[in-house]
Image 1 (spheres, rainbow, N blue to C red):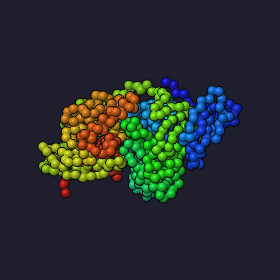
Image 2 (cartoon, one colour):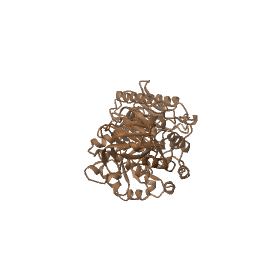
Image 3 (cartoon, rainbow, N blue to C red):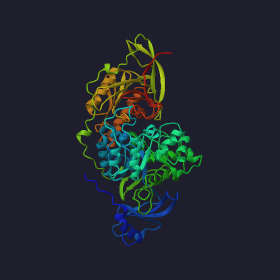
Length: 600
């Protein structure tokens, strides 16, 4: 399907002016609603909205002068008319869905604009993968803006990706129609140390007049943080406490506060506004990220706004954080983010500003969802075979591939262990004394095995380590080709035979997530596109994902959304300890460390 650009303001300005003046008739008039004005932060009852050519032409107490014989009328009946919601930072791939199916899932929740960083697929397919995501995004009936990925690999020298993104790739992408800026600059040590490649990517973005996304995953708010800000990133979503949020806005960044499926960072930071009284226009809400189960069952940005309100935020301020603040940050204040003349007609009708039921969703002047059901088509890209055949193990894996040999003559050994932290992206660097049985180091108690299996170049490589916190019991294993950000394969298990079965199964189906226990497969989520996404309907993927979550719980894991924790165990830019194809990485020092140490 060919991409048809949405008409620009200059193309339709004459008609918008004529409709506002009453010389021409509007396409659609929403009548008798309460106008939620995010510019002035007020609610104005008894207002109408006139829409023409997909944009807002007039907002006022009476739009009867804009009505003609063919004008469609929607009666608001006093309901709130608020701007469509914007997700300021997200990765569509983390929803396990293609852009089309992701749009289909979130439109009924009132999300009409998304700012997406497809760095997941960039690690697997390079610039070609980014282009595919960009192209399908532009085909959708809502606004999906693409940030060009900045860091593939996320930490050069500490992991091997399927492809690398270069400064030349970034410069090329800045000319694409849907590129809004540079994706999160995860290589913060590179920026701090003046790495020429990172600075060239930032320069290419700023030379194009676009926004540089940030990612400062460190608690250090001293000179290193100042150096990072001086390097150009304009926002950050990695804050986890009030001090993080305050530091970011004081240094001229926008503080993005996230509520995703596993990251709960709004409540701990929004007090910067609700208690400390900082200017709320510098705070933005985002998801980063939601998997399909959350989208289908709980919502998207409407869920985040409701949560912010429940944390004590004024509803109008919370809405600003999910609309106009986001639009302003990305230089789109004249396009999206408010119900004002000239803007795209992205509008939600809701009967309550606190609970935020999404009753009608209008995007670009078209009713796209009604009563929780989508009413439009979300076109699909014809994904090529190169995007569907991406799991290359090199050989069929066996239990022996997951063995960890013990030092000669030892009975027990001390191991460095990745410690999972519930509801947060950071991990803990733990140490555990583990037993040795028949020359092999074994997990014990809360400690089980983790392996990273190389899947891009068929090297047959397997990195073995230990992880604590999942609570798994019995003989089981869980494998996933979603392994941020390098997206090799992560296998976590209590039994090496089950680990081999799970890994081989994902190679067989072309990627996804699977759980084995006692030799039987209990759950499978197929993700055939890049091993990251499915082009099946969101409801189908969500049902399989729900089965996966239930199976994790049945295997002893009671962490909230533990799959998200699993999938980030290879993210070598977030402290403290991670696994990569090169070994165990201490992200506090950005150095490889030994798995085993002699007992003191």
